[in-house]
Length: 198
Image 1 (cartoon, rainbow, N blue to C red):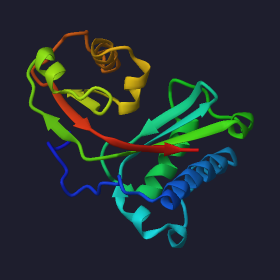
Image 2: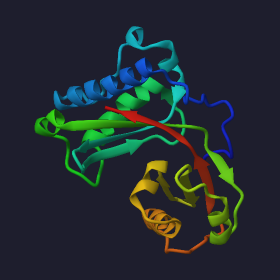
Image 3: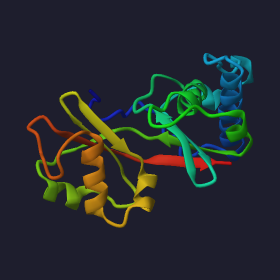
Image 4: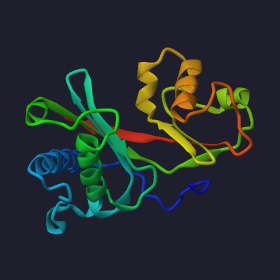
């Protein structure tokens, strides 16, 4: 269960272009290593810029044109930003339960998008109406938890849905909850992301 906020979490909104490119390269190297049977590949520490050795949480999304190849991520920082991208790239390519593993042909046409998460901040709401008034459409990613149920949508999901109500219905469904249901244990967290790719 996430704590209400993580003030100690680095904010990566100032990542330089060179560092962003290193992360995209790491993602591609990790998928290629996985295709070669090395699912534990990590970048060599002496090749990782200092900024990317800081602890961070990321999601990696792989696509082939408009088709999703995989999307896996980490909600809270557990390892260096570079290692998190490598692990989530391999997970997105070979461990997304919704999709088949990435092939060499997919790899040749694959695009990479990396979302670096900011701190989780709990939203003190007790109803759908309060949540509607609190959420910043197009800005906030949301994480909901209720007992063992848990689901998140990145801020980029706002681009794929027409309105707030559908965003919430889809998020509740992803968590295995009925639309509009508000269990006593439900907690809602917001976060922002820095997104980039190739």
